[in-house]
Amino acid sequence: MTLAEALEQMEALIEPGRADQMAAYHKQARSVLGIPNPALNDLTKRWRQSLSVEERVTLAGALWDTDIFEARIAAAKLLTQARIKGDAAAWQLIASWVPQFDSWAIADHVCMTAQKRLVADPSRLDEVESWTQSDHMWTRRAALVATLPWAKLNNIKPEDQARRTRILNWAASYVPDRDWFMQKAIAWWLRDLSKHEAEATRAFLAAHGKDMKPFARKEAGKYLQNSVPEAD
Image (cartoon, rainbow, N blue to C red; front, top):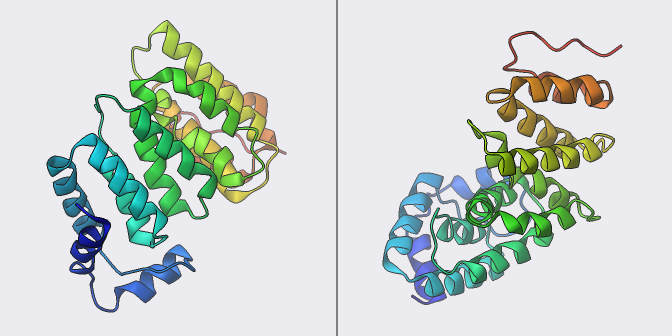
């Protein structure tokens, strides 16, 4: 499938009057077509079923480079699959997008795709750890959003417990960052963790909660049986 063919199929899904609403909601300066997410889901599912991995990687790269809002979302969705045989090129492409993040919707779709590739090959956490030192806020944030699977594990194996501890250390290093999106990412990780390892969440909040923004501290403790006390 060529890029032109893919864009033609996407344009057929445009909902009149939707583009301006989406651009305002997502705070996009780039072109927004106005395609509902369910329609984009169905289209990219068909593409995944009909294209080889190599073809998907090529098309995903081309879609991303258009800098169209829905095309970047579609690029991420093209590579969202738990098992991809020979996924090195897919991972390299995903990682190359991270420094270009500039909005939460695109970042979150790519991070959901990255989650699959990290679970498939946890050694890639070494590369993700380098993201935590970036000057780019969205890259630092991606290190937590892309590693959410380790917050959600039950009956955790020792090697995954070590990975969970490693990622919690990244989250702790982010606490002094007052950016709303960074605080939200910390809270998101801890909130999901609390459903599976409540004591680890309590320990983190006991050590760092006083330095988190109040909304993040509250969100992190949302599912704990005992409410998290407000800091003085």
